[in-house]
Image 1 (tube, rainbow over the protein chains, first blue to last red):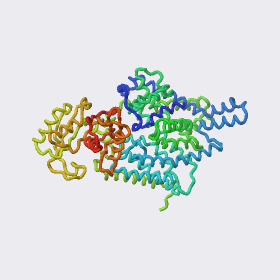
Image 2: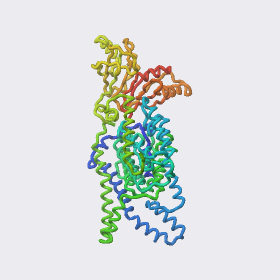
Image 3: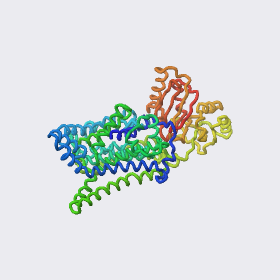
Image 4: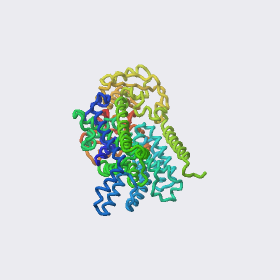
Length: 391
Length: 235
């Protein structure tokens, strides 16, 4: 599972600082053939859909599985072990974790989420960039934008007028469309912090904000999930960029999960399949975050990868990962997580009471299958028909 | 007015006002068509960017008659990569023609040199500049566009040491692109200096039009004369 995130790692690495020149051209027709005529891309889609379906099913039956584990597997162990197993189970299934250390760390992660974007903004200003070092400022207007960024950074670091800071970040993100929608999509993660600021009290400077409510967590989950989901599709669309990174950093091509997604494909198209599997892995992670399925586990893996990239692989150039690490940490240690599937679960429990186990099974399995197919295949097919001439 | 939580209209309004302010500052600093300002052409998704052939534009402040043009064409004739040399019909206005606001006479014109895609690797801007000068002209600007993602590569015969020569180019170009110096370099993304190969690579911003003359002048200003200046596509 840890490798899942490793794939996303390279995906986050931005083209400005990460070498991305193709050593050997890709076979471009691979990306423009319909899934019907392209068994390799279809196979990757099937693999991803199968894993997604499996995880959705495990999620649907998580309480049954947890009950079985606690009552059967751990029943013979002592109280300490059973408590630890219960906490672990709660952590994995996104239920509230009642442990003092967990709560304390959770408070700190909220502070980290609230304040760290201010530092990243100031760093971007010192590198003549907007929001992140990947987006250089035009020299003609750089001074104004840099001072504006520092102003927003000061609001954030001093926790002053946070709704204003949120609005300014939202506005800045809108301005990024001036440099192309692709740029704005790349900067989506900053909106997670912006949403928290925008929903904070105006007198934020007088308050110690160490907890986020369920609504705020939902916004964070949605925005981060959407970021990964969108960037994953964009990676398949802009395939040369991702393949160029793989050419220059061959180690990223040995990721177990990405390679698992590419199982059964033609070795002749190894790099092409890797690009598609890579993008799909990110789509997969993003979708699970968006619907709130094993959100803590995915967040934990992503934090590990983003931190490793920032501190070890690419260094200061990847400081914008702070925009992701803050909200992901807050999500890991939050006891206010919700899932978009919970409303279905309530309905199925009702159905079970009335109609019995068969209805319950069909009612829980069928949506997982349909969802897995709908998320993957229509968009993948659509991408094979898109125009890439402008890239 | 009392701001309270649960008034998303304030946040929404401030967002729009701020975004509009940033666009206004941008527009005020660089007057340009709104389609460019909103990224519809710059990012290469627009038809204009897609259809454009690689083109060099010479801004010549004296190009008043067909005799001048013939001389210039004759000078460019030996450059086999120059496919079509055409005079741009719309003559320059003072404001547009000279971006540094110096007075400009009414005898100036622009010449467009179209290139075939397969000839891009042969283009040498130093040879072009020299040919123009040898014919008795000076190009105020040598602009190159039509490739969304590219890099310039200047070969500097003198680049002998790491601590001084290499550092001099890196640091001085960095200074030269600062807004208060008066130089534009709006197209420049970053540079890298390779002492072993004696090259300076200038990576351009996506979809930008490059002022090659500005780059040559900057290198000259730093005390370096490039022997050749070529262009390559990035990815």
